[in-house]
Image 1 (cartoon, rainbow, N blue to C red):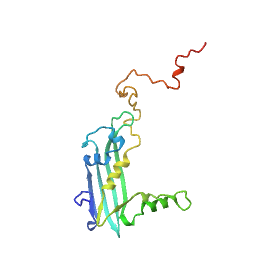
Image 2 (cartoon, one colour):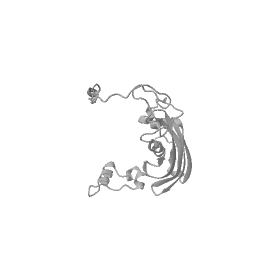
Image 3 (cartoon, one colour):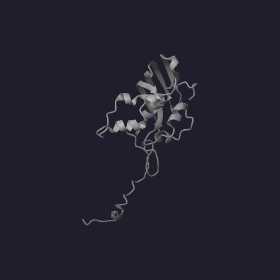
Image 4 (spheres, one colour):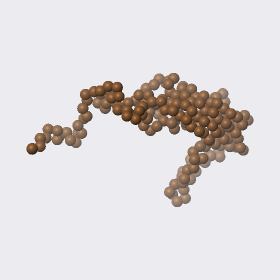
Length: 199
């Protein structure tokens, strides 16, 4: 782990306030491999990938480190219909807990807790979702910041609600152009195409 990272906080520095900037290069790196990001065909170093700013107050209580504050920014992904760029704004309040890695439940323990004693599944509290591990005397805020961008990507982002998308035959953007393509005939009904019904 790089202690020189701007997202690293040493336990000895707590309590502290931090303003953390996330540049577009880092956003592009964090979102690489996500379909709605890769569909843009953007360059590896994309100045339009996004950006973010976190304003956090951090303090320790025993071995637990608490971070609270705000995160604001934006990211650019592809419209799920026309594949044009869509800017997604992010405005979140953050309240998270960092715990020593050995204090967090293992994957096996989490599965047992999720199954519950009756096998119907356990209720997951909001606190369970906002836990991050740390090692030694170093808290790395990068996973928290990365999560803000990843969770902000919608399942099917749209450039606008009435986006007409691309023509499935010729690929033209139907928001800006029109084409003369006809909808393909369902192959199950193709045999009925020439059928003439008596009048």
